[in-house]
Length: 103
Image (cartoon, rainbow, N blue to C red; front, side, top):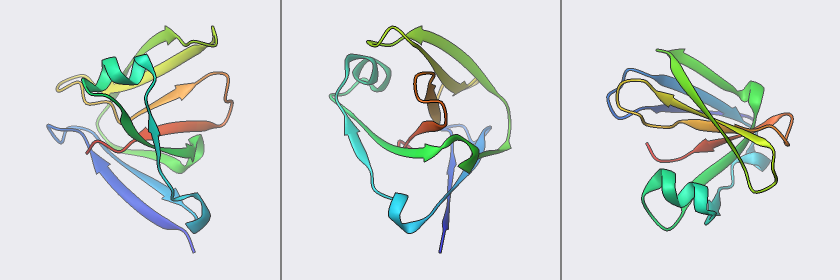
């Protein structure tokens, strides 16, 4: 049975849910340079989820696009107020998005 996870940005202006089946609830640690720069740490704790499993339930996100190591675009979504980043989408991965488990 799927489980719904709730999240929000630091200032609570943006809220979201992610619905995942039990076999998709594991996390990954990313140590790439982009994640280090965005987090200010040595890694980020991430959840890979189908893009359609992510539902924005409150607020609006702004997008920043950069070129990943693959040369493909990566769209990073963040709260316009506090700049917390709930997820990013790698264009080379058509469906999955990366949901960042920071909040």
